Image 1 (cartoon, rainbow, N blue to C red):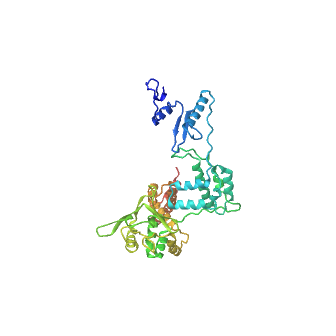
Image 2 (tube, rainbow, N blue to C red; image 1 turned 120 degrees about the vertical axis):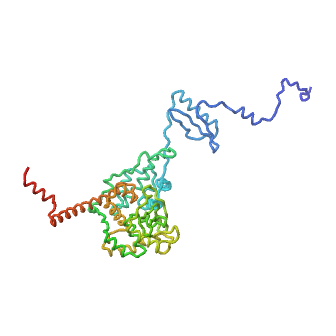
Length: 439
């Protein structure tokens, strides 16, 4: 009988059909692993990991197939069972160049526009760029000190600021990433110069004399204001009596000035609302920024005697519109006044007043000293000046203490004058008389 024509009984016949994907899954499906994990990555490769010694360990490489990853885990499992397992050595740190890390540091720091521009200028400058070719781990304390020593000692402020920038960058590299818990790139920062080294003067150089700011007197303030052009006079008043910074003063707008009038229309009180400042990261680029600290956001009461001149200034010189600048640039009412434009007229005015040494910022110092002399507390001074640092405000209270000695001297002179004119009580006279009587 021809086998092809033999009837099928069905007892020993296996039907033939195409293999399906479901059959493949049944054949390749394996039970869940009891040791380690295998995870498929987006790239299509496989990553193996296992827990041992109280932490999870990743395979040093990824695998082409799941089977290869499983075989690697089986070997690690065997090592553990046979007590041959040792913790894998720590991974080699990445070789990150100072230049690359420094640029990333500048981009991610919370800096003001002017500070960021200044840091970038220093980072690209000849001092800090010395470290650009080196990786972070190649920079050592010896290298830092040698670099600092070759910087020109004739410019101590510039070389110290360059060091402070390098130190800040390396300090961040020596700490774990707070967001990702990534390990630190450096075990410790190599920038560890002592104060003695930082403050060391070159051989033969004289000690820098300590200069003390001399506030302007009321007569000098009046002379300066009279010598200034009319559109600048109110700036002198506000700088000396309300003590805003120049960057805050030149960003003041009409809504920032609140003045209360009585029934007759006469100004009786006023408040200066300070919340913004304008900075110049580039010579021709003005950036308005919000004051970041709570201390910088403040309301300063305006002394009543300068209210009328301020209102007159607003009527004549402030930029038009509800949001106009109080002290706009001369060439355009929508542009901010630059420091250089002010100094063109201020230099002549301070010279007329006999104070060629008085910087514009010293008018702020003058206002702070005057406030301290009225008996303002430390907290009140800090609020008026926008200081968050107690040390800065204490400077002006020291000035008030010097003034207090002068007040005491005048009180004694007043008492002596009263004794001479009326024969009244004199502590020194009575003390002498009582001493003659004996005990």
